[in-house]
Image (cartoon, rainbow, N blue to C red):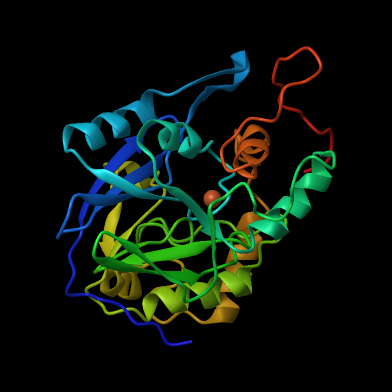
Length: 294
Ligand SMILES: [Fe+2]
């Protein structure tokens, strides 16, 4: 598929770093209007205490209100396994439509089984307002945006291109961080390599915005780079590394990684578009821990 992008359009991108999960959420403003999109918001959780709160999301809402922005889209680049989405909370306060990749249905089927969800858990993506297919376009104000299906880390991963900026989710990390793991259910290292090549085929000047940064080797947190920089310097795929080299490295590395701390609450909430599971018979909401299932 060949993609039409609009590199002459330069959105204003503001990153909000969440130190608890090393996630970066973004407000992306159309340069020609007050319209914006919010990419990958975070709900705070103290998992040990079973307590959720919204400081990070409130910071974004405050920014939106202070700048008098109109939220058109709440984009999830994928079903995150390391933080909980705050999209419904933000939607309730400032509006916007919720969008994710079409293959959310695969993720919902997989984890619907793992968490033994009942029939009331819809696995058709209907919790979202829009399911993006590869090559789909949508508007943020006058800015035409593009969804590129970039699976591998998860089946539903989508990279969103808005003007000269692309939001890559966990497909890529900063050049010295490499790439995300590909060993979750539905993940695949070879598929991830192919998806990364799609991103690297965008113009060299394209600004790339990461979903995570862990400040490798003690450097300060960063979240913005370019296609050219990733092509030249990414430690996992840069400098012309072959698919075979990447798959071997990625598979060996993934076998050594522990599960993310918040994978169990994250999946149960994020597969529901950021909603908590419905109340139990006592009217309270619970998160489950499946034993020996992951
Ligand atoms: Fe992820």
